[in-house]
Length: 427
Image (tube, rainbow, N blue to C red; front, side, top):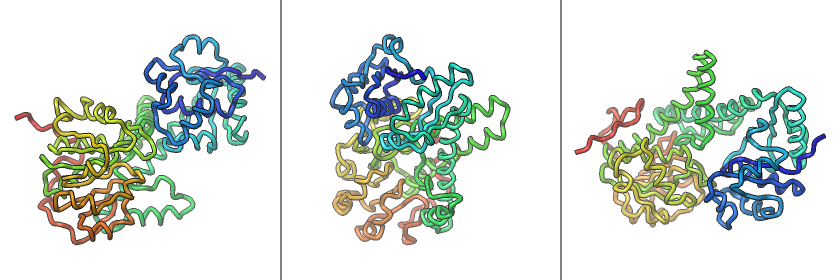
């Protein structure tokens, strides 16, 4: 059987970088070269400060960089010298979760390899199998045809996104009835047919894969004249959008029907904890809706650079003209973000947000002081926070019946829950 000695991976991003770093560490006899047209990104991979944050990644890279792991912009030479080129030869979809990518790579649930059902295609499949067999048990390596492999990737992410949208739909019902979505999730998750994974209600899913893969599935169904199937999966995205708008509307309603010129602290900008990735982050959309209503946002995230936050919020579909420069401040720590704020909005479930000195924060906030927990990270602190004096609003639960009244009960929210809010006209 043909033996792979040199691998080239095209793309030094969130998938290519970690995947090939682990391959290099697990296969010291294979030379792995990761190439990219972005010279600054390659320079970062070759520096002490990697371009992405992932627990354990730095240690993996440093253990083999310059030995059998290389990062380069010389794409043509790397391709011509390689025995195997990731992306252009085989279908080898990744099933990584950001924040646990290194663990997922070293101990995967499965490795899926798809190839053409030709002698050449099957030889390539077996050669790649041999690479993974350095550390993955053979029974966990699945081989399929190319279509099955690619569709498995789309379907896996669609099913996970569907579970999140399902529990988020129940969270709206819980808030209307007085149920607690965490208790409901625990109850249904104990059913072995359902299981308890991906039943965490929140302000909505983000990241580069879920929305993209569900929409790819929708497009594929429409192209193949399966409109009923397309509409079914489109609802997963629609529910996610609804959850974000609903949460933003709740913030506006609770703050006495207006956030214009009010300071709001946004804690967390990454789409989830333990990553610096902001792609499709719910924080972007919550920030957009609040900016459109004239709120002044002070944003803190422990891993997302200031420049990335500004770029995300300056996108033409998010803001216009000078909105970001007028309304957004990037804070260096959470206490600075909360100083003088009307409300604290938790958009990312960073563990550090559970450990903040909320008595210190409350003293510096305007009163009444609100906390909107979009990730249910403060569940065990509600009694303590209420004793301090906070008004707590969270996903899928009424924290207290003694809520500070506001005039919006039963009224139409500030913006439609069916459509994104309209831009305010210039005066």
